[in-house]
Length: 261
Image 1 (cartoon, rainbow, N blue to C red):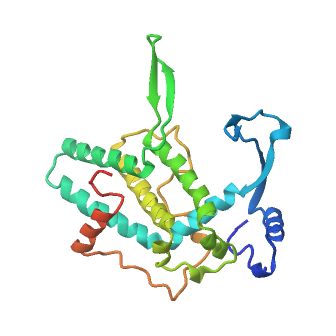
Image 2 (cartoon, helix red, strand yellow):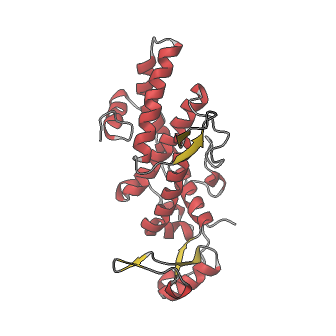
Image 3 (cartoon, rainbow, N blue to C red):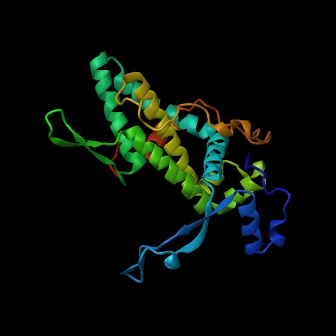
């Protein structure tokens, strides 16, 4: 089932919030969950049915499709971001042998992962060494990217309600390039997606991390939303070739900037 245009038959302005919620539940846009707050007014809250409450949250399949749609619509923006990165990367590795090239690539790999995941979380797993001693293993960068991607999918559905509404009513013409400047989370999402593709490309080339046991959702390919719609014919696609000045300007202002944040 596609969520794009799922509400196109409705006059949203004529519906109350309760009516709209019921329709969204019936069509799988929202799902009903029961949660128990761990604290109430600063005091621990007993985990019991009487302390539970019903809330409505976006369906995970819908949030994933909306994310894919955004990535698809602004694919040209992502491509220009990739060009901006490789413009500098190719300059950095020019004339280097294979060993030094790998070192430079690893520096980029770690920096991009740090900036894209914002160092907001990590996963530590205890392991027992052959000697019997306990050690700790950190999660792989690509694994953290999957968690970050899931969080972005949830945030898009929760924080950019107007674009989501236009997605649900099937209004493709709404998604102009100017929209990115109006919703910072859209810009963050596109930069994250570009970061993910660079990470995957560098890892494919240098095998910094094995991906056998990492989530299968992360793949270096075009979004699944490609099949959902055709871009509006009146929407101008950006030229994939950018000038040196544009590349430098991008690098100074983007997630790939070498300056510390």
